[in-house]
Image (cartoon, rainbow, N blue to C red):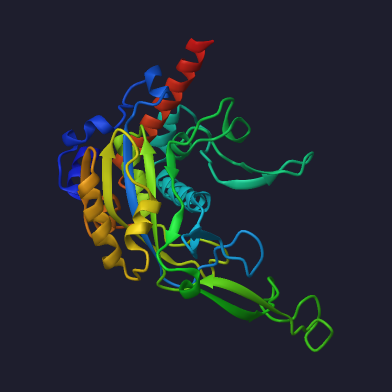
Length: 350
């Protein structure tokens, strides 16, 4: 399916109406290496479908933000982006396994493509950093990478986001639970010993968890992005299902995409959305006022729905769960053109 056709199927409008808000990466052009003022604002509502372990220190620590006189659970965008990026890479790998020849032809390489968010440690300074990035795929060319991660120059992320803020305060949305300490290998309370021996322990630990059903509001912006890359990005967003720690037991979420605004700059924020809907505890009562608010302040073209996710999935995914290959291959071509545009721009400035 062509990108323009998929866009119309999902959003009900012709791509021509929003074409000016997307970058044309169908060819190499050094001008594409600098910001063009083309912004896609994506507004999200996220529901916890079971308890979430969202922390930044110990087991009883929940990431909180203070708004007014109360504290609310928040999810840092960096944590969400990590989940988001890994999901997109999963989808790209699934496509690559089926269309290796076509992708390698676009890459102009014969080696096996590999790209992963993989924390590694420097042997000298013992600092954690990300390794395994390829510096050429649609994920790297949108989310960016640093010199030491995937190339000989930096690429700034064109996907940015706000805090994810709970609509319900900590007092009503966080629960503390106590568990037996369990050995990671044996999955029993026998830790470092034999059954019936000194290895059995009655140790306990506690976790602070965000309650099931808690709603978060969020906003992501995609800057100077191409149509096909945009379609892959919203496809990945629509199928994110886990976030946080210990996702074997916790972390199930559902991502709703009720509104997208195509503009020349960022419009509104997750904090604005939070102020509109704080105290509300169900998805429908959160989405309606957000969409009404965006209608009042829209700058550019706004599309709204109860949730675009299902339409995105039915349009962009095939029956085997892989993304539409034509759109993915086009995205690879656009990523290559963007990479070459940057390299030409760097050479021209030397």
